[in-house]
Amino acid sequence: MPAERFDVVVVGAGISGIGAGVHLREKSPDRSFVILEGREDIGGTWDLFKYPGVRSDSDMHTLGYEFKPWKAEKSIADGPSIMEYLRETVAEHDLRRHIRFGERVARAEWSTQDATWTVHTQRSDGSHGRFECNYLFMCAGYYSYKAGYLPEFAGREKFRGTIVHPQEWPDDLDCVNKRVVVIGSGATAVTIVPAVAETAAHVTMLQRSPTYMVSRPDRDALANFLRKILPTRVAYKLTRAKNTWRQQLVYRRTRTNPHQIKMLLLGGVQQELGGKYPIKRHFLPRYNPWDQRLCLVPNSDFFAAIRAGRASVVTETIETFTETGVLLSSGEHLAADIIVTATGLQLVSLGEADIFVDGNRVDFAQTRTYKGMAYSDVPNLATSFGYINASWTLRADLTCTYVCRLLNHMRDTGTRQCTPRLRPGEEDMPRRPWIDGFSSGYMQRVMHLMPAQGDREPWINPQNYDKDKKMFREGGVNDGVMQFTNLEEVVVDAALASSAAR
Image (tube, rainbow, N blue to C red):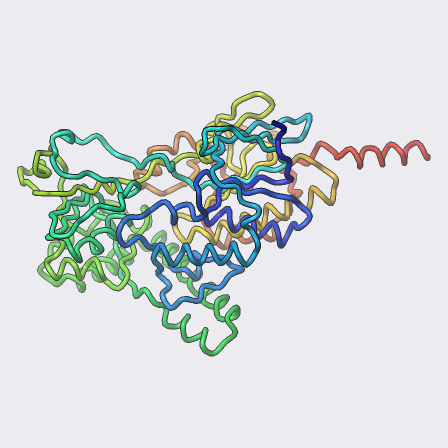
């Protein structure tokens, strides 16, 4: 079967891929594109995760797209509300006809001679697909959809109750009047605990070490007020700017004065739980704020569950699972009917696809990251990877803007290939981690598999919205690092004709 041909193949129909489709339609309307989605619906994360209480962990005025205002009262939104927002986006921009469902990208091969990516997919029905394009835009997220991260727990096979990972939450799991132990202390655990505690007999969050938490209302009062007195887009733009500024301000303060932020966060928790609660044991991490992601607690629901006695926190290591629960290293036994292993994600690069350039498999650990979205010596390919210290979509929007600028430049100059290449002498640049200064386990487990940063632009991944705006929106596309080659035949023919005329 012959391959289907497009100018651009977008991989993934989650927040990033849908955003890419809109940007391509609006900023590069002359380019044909297809969005390949391995699942049977749009949404990515928000279609996959079904655990109780699933919600955003940042406000929707920044997690939403720059081109589509978030109009709901709640700015910390649940999964179904986010899915509704994404479906509206797809309908408003007529993207459904561009999306192919059940097409999981397994391999992509670049040919310099043909200036073409050949993308191979595995289909839901067991067959295989083949697509060709000039540019490959990977928007498949950053973690494996096959399974979450699950450490080895001694005695796991002994437990007679139910063990479930949040990434694989069954629709029929009944927690009513059950004793539930949630292993973990990240955003997923902090979301599940208060949701399950509403009906469970009791919920215990069992953590090896604490996480910084901050409580915020799930409604943005200023945003809702502005929307009443201003045009929707104006109100959204102002709210988005305000919230982005606040995110960046807090993050910068954690870098310059971590002790001050630490005390503010701990003071907030102490106020929630009272002066006698052992805050330092259960809510004082061994790292500084934003060395790992902060956990958002909307409307203090997590703390309210603790105050009501429906939930509790235990900070201890696990000795072994038993038939009826979990035995801790201290000798304490936590009885459980259900154990939830909220132990994190398995990070992957480029949607777990194998990437080849002119017959050679790309080892991304040996590459340098170009602006945090492309890779040295890998032509015509970009990855959408958002922020870990702010809302994901802020960076996804910037990346899409840059990709469209790049495609338009190639059109205008008649070139078919763009490749980031190290300049002479840059091979000896220091190799810095792709995500620097972030100690979360799910990052550290795979950082050795990721491309390295350098010590200068554009070989950096700053995770800084202000710097990224300048790099992506204002920085020159033809910067001396991105090499434009492989002239289109029509341009070559025109040059030959001009030479013959002379």
